Amino acid sequence: MKRTKKERQALLKSTIEATPFITDEELAEKFRVSVQTIRLDRLELSIPELRERIKNVAQQQLDTVKALPLEEVIGEIIDLQLDEAAISILDIKSEHVFSRTKIARGHHLFAQANSLAVAIINDELALTSKANIRFTRQVKEGERVVAKAKVNRIEGYRTTVEVTSYVEKEAVFSGQFIMFRSTGEGREGSAT
Image (cartoon, rainbow, N blue to C red; front, top):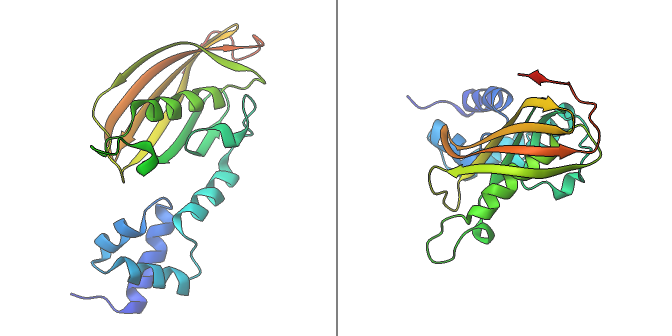
């Protein structure tokens, strides 16, 4: 059964409110209409495009990154609780892939995870002391990588951060980062 424009727009609005990081392509598939129809509906409803929605959510939810300038983080941070957890999104584009295979270069996935591990540290200085990483599947151009970081332990000047990156719900990268911080004033000996 085909929905009326009014019904579709009401559902579109509630869907975007519930999942603000959904793409126009995903919405078009969900509602069985063209991407152009979704874009026109968004314009009529004054719903910004995905990039603006990400920025708006990020501004509402972020602690202030201390260890590096926000523009130096690889990907867009959408959630940050210093010394606890963080999430970033990286859309894999042509500049991130090998031209012949369209497979993402590993250093981009590592950079996203590593910069998120730096950003999560509640200190003016954070450096990667050691990283144990694993790639679990190739990532292709056009895919969205969501990296989720969690602080597992803070002991003096060392913080252990676990990062797992996903495409859809499939893990594509995981890493444990031992971070050096300039002060030993974190949640001493804590584990979450």
